[in-house]
Length: 266
Length: 265
Image (cartoon, rainbow over all chains, first blue to last red; front, side, top):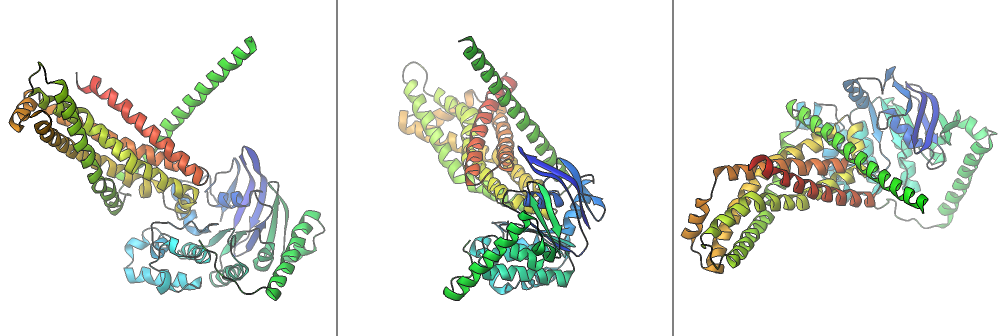
């Protein structure tokens, strides 16, 4: 379980103003909201990448900010983080990148075939052919493939919690759907608790148990996708209507446009 | 008029205050970085493989450029010395002038400039790019500490490689000066070495290597620190790299100026 208690954060101007939120074990929660409203900042406070000015975040009852360094390392090992632009290590191959996601010392202790098996399994989990990408550098991969390698790195250590920071940003609709499907598959297979920060409201409604709308540093709405769709709150409605508009645009494209490239160039 | 004067004075004072605050903050952060590198090294959290990779890059990779710089330093010192000593001063003194200039000053300082340009700037740009592209955050999120992974290998490698490079630069510089003296002013190798030995102190070589040790520690320390502090995108990386190079050159020159009163008296 993840608990945010009165989380405040400011960078010159307030970004988060007293966030109180609980994410249950094995739940998938999507955080949506306008750009620059603090969605990624909130996500980064979850595993201590950003320290809140006030408040606390607890994971399974353990405070992220009032624990010893070793406890924080242990918390981070429990949490897989999928970065917006994958954040793969440029100088390492896909294999080496994914190895960094293995638990401390595991890569050193385990025999190479075991590591290779784990890495290949995680690549297969994200629908990538290991033989094709294992020895490539991140610069040799397309945008969609990089995101999936980033996801493979996050899941190879079998985390209990997965945090997704804008997992479909910059991807075309086909890859967006593929990533959404992956998030669902990983949840079903690994029973992980997931928080997905996204600006894609359609994706949020498809994959989530609950949706949270963050505006002006505060949670405006937290509820199920159904209650989000039916909400009478004008701000929530604006987001829901944008989804309708996006769906209409996509249908138009699917009807009239020829198929284009499916992967965004890195 | 008085208002304008007060505004200018207070503006100037505020600027000095901000600069001093920045200086103290940098000093504090670098001291903390040194402490964390020391702890990571002592507790065996720095991979030998990473240090060897950096040694190849910092040390072996710098040899060609250090060689060129040392040859030119020796040749120029010899030529200019020869030009000045053509009247009353015995020509063999040129051996001492070239040796002392290269060993005490040009060897360590020119090698440090090579290291700043070739290695320091690269380290800042590399770590800065990792910072702005969230790769440092990725390390944190994977439970890995960037200090033993990124900072310590570079600082250890710089501290080991630089004294060796300075020793090499000293030897090559003096040898190049000896050859140049023959062609520039007709001073033979025996006379050159006679002059060099006449005023030679063995301490001078140690002094030169000690300079290399200090510069070799400080250059990667500043470059790593500036890399970790990088903010913004590509522009931020460029700004951090420029600041790091200026910071490193000034630090090396200030440290260089503190060496003679401390160790040559």
